[in-house]
Image 1 (cartoon, rainbow, N blue to C red):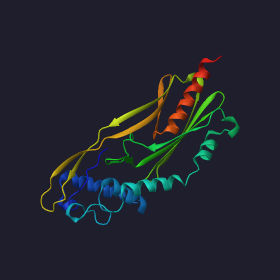
Image 2: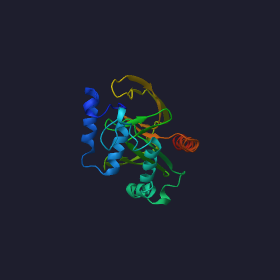
Image 3: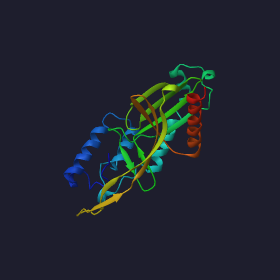
Image 4: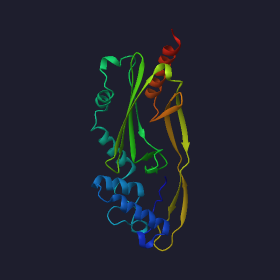
Length: 240
């Protein structure tokens, strides 16, 4: 979803659409921690002190960089490797076929996630970390998803026999993002249409009848790990 930015002077000076967004933001903040409320304000670009923007000033509570630092701080509070191995129920010695693949990225497909985009990057309110392990006969995945605007978390485990995997591929999407920014005038408002498209990279594992997608931040290390997994899958499936 895209959020309007630059609301004018709170609900009193806003259009009906802007007022609805302000009301939604205020409803979301009820019962949340102070950090979660700041993250909600960040996505709605509404100042957390009095819900005002426009001529009374834009949200100065959190920058894009500060939000990303908050996410990284939260990530450091988890030992995902140990959580993954415990959840899958395997011993380290059983998953030594090739080094595990670690995927980490914001999520952009969830209907209830909030998204903010600027000219350099895109972030969302949900973040996912996936570990992929390889044994002699199976591949195991563990995914942990957390939300910066709530206490919601999800843990998902899956296992695949190599013989069942029909495709192991990456996909890159360019997502169109168009936002309506209101001018900062105190009397008259003016729409300014801004395009900030963003990139979404995914790994897809296809098995008969279904497929599974995992978000990732592309890098040379991730690409090399995925290529190594593809090579191993070919050997497992076709080398007899």
